[in-house]
Image 1 (cartoon, rainbow, N blue to C red):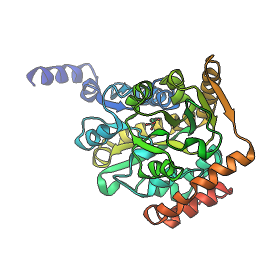
Image 2 (tube, helix red, strand yellow):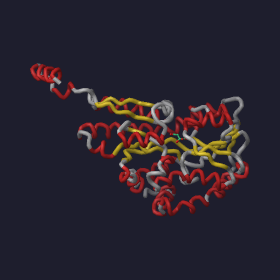
Image 3 (tube, protein in one colour):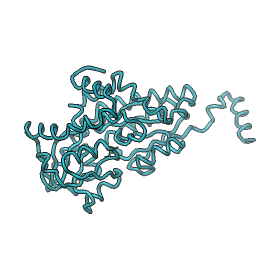
Amino acid sequence: MRKFILAAAAAAIIGVPAASMAKPMVMKFSFVTSMSTPKGKAAAVFKSEAEKLLPGKVKIELFPNSELFNDKKALTALALGDVQFIAPSMSKLGKYTNKLGVFDLPFMFKDMNAVSRFEDGPTGRKLLHSMENRGYLGLAYWHNGMTNLSANKPLLLPSDAKGLKFRVQSSDIIASTFEQIGANAQKLPFSEVYQALQVGTVNAQGNTWSNIYTKKFYEVQTDFTVSNGRIVDYVVLVNASWWKGLPADIRAGLAKAMAIATKVNNENADKLNAEAMKKVAAAPHVTIHHLTEAQHAAWVKAMHPVWTKFEKRIGKDVIDAAVKANAGGTH
Ligand code: LMR
């Protein structure tokens, strides 16, 4: 303390404001994917922009690959203040809000533009606040991409999936989607998927190309289907009272850095997934299957009853808004 007062006095004499001598606020950002995924790259942009906009005031530490927490633990850690930024896939948030379950519905969005329209529209904006009563505030949505299925046999029709054990994210909606077609669903954290596929605890999965490639799922699966069955997108979450209690200049700088990172992410995610798909396809033992229109329609039809099953839980208004966004509107 005495040292600080002396240093501050010395700084005042030579004209350096005492505040600039303060140590930067250290903020941890934890996520489960690698640095070379859309989320990892976006987190790196957020860090560099935030540290550029708030020089000496903030230091953002990145923890990829579930190094610090898996998604479930990260949510508890955020509430406790042990981490300041997390970006879980929305499929992990069913315990905190039912509304974001709209993102888990099979074949909800036809492409990434439809996802953007929904997220940027009034309903999407409102949903960023859907966990505020639980202490979490959504700052932004970050895209990853659409899921594609894999197994050690071709999955061309829903009946091909019968009896398989699919690893699913911790979402009742996603589990129900696979049960609907006669498959088994096993909820597992992302960090455990590779090993579970390797030892056969599960023998099928669905994820984005960037996740499949960076976590090497293609090493332990032979057949991949371009199914585009579901969106994997993220919400960047902070502890609402921590965020509101930040000094205004810091909050504004972080919000600006987040807007820049979000824009970069959402412009690059498609490209990263396309590149990852090519790399998966290049593995000698891998076959990539493209569905015919009739095969695609069969998956949509077989999985669709899940929409009715979860309509009440998610909210018809939310599903209707997503349907309208899909058709070209922003609702
Ligand atoms: C998963 O668990 O498969 C994904 O949610 C991981 C991620 O963050 O993309």
